[in-house]
Image 1: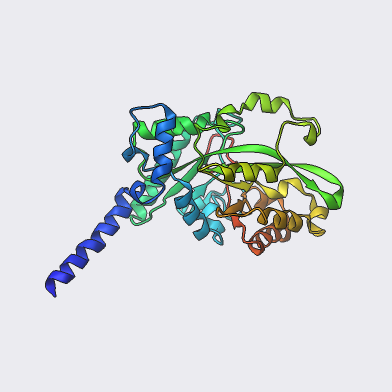
Image 2: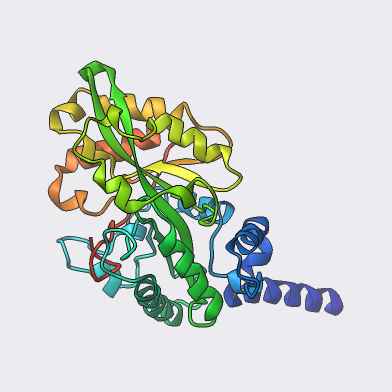
Length: 320
């Protein structure tokens, strides 16, 4: 009996240590990380040093857990820039961030360093927290920032051991609104992509920016439904609608255009999750509470995962 109890104790201890000291690469998304290493062209990259990089299986598990927990995405609580989520160490994920490789102000290294500093504080206060912070780089129309972040993590895995990083991208699509006889631009996020893979390597931020100002259907952008299908056709990557309230005014919301959009969007679901930024932080201070709440409830109605972000462009990963 004593031997059985002793063996059981060591199994439990091993499980705890595994979750804490960083062997998640063994459990999650091993093939994804191997694919990144192979396509990167960096022969010095190792699987062991990919510990901090999240693939879609691991990220899907986490965002499902956070689905009805907006506090995980909120750096501000009661007022813009109060930063109580950061001060109280409740903030856990920023899944929409821009670096100097598009229209952001931070370099990938500065972004990762800020995340690591915060994650180390969380880990010190809550040693059994598996995900002190998750940060995604989602530059517009390019993955150079995501590639740089992976390089930095490979170079110094110990420094970033408490950070989880998501390689992503933000692109422009369009959506037809039959009830309004209108077409609107819509931004799409893709997470857990291979940033060294086509079609992401063919995208160009500067070229894409030159196209704005023309009618959406004249632009070289996909309808959002086609973009979802394209990402889902790839071996790696999940896709979602960024800041959905940006595209519709109050009247649109009242006549259920958002309901129509989410219903159509939900119909595209296959074996991968769909998400939308219902907890997008800037909404909380510039949008009527009822409208904000309606977006979240409609997403949940159609079983669309609700995520959030600061949509970082400035000098802090905790702010817009």
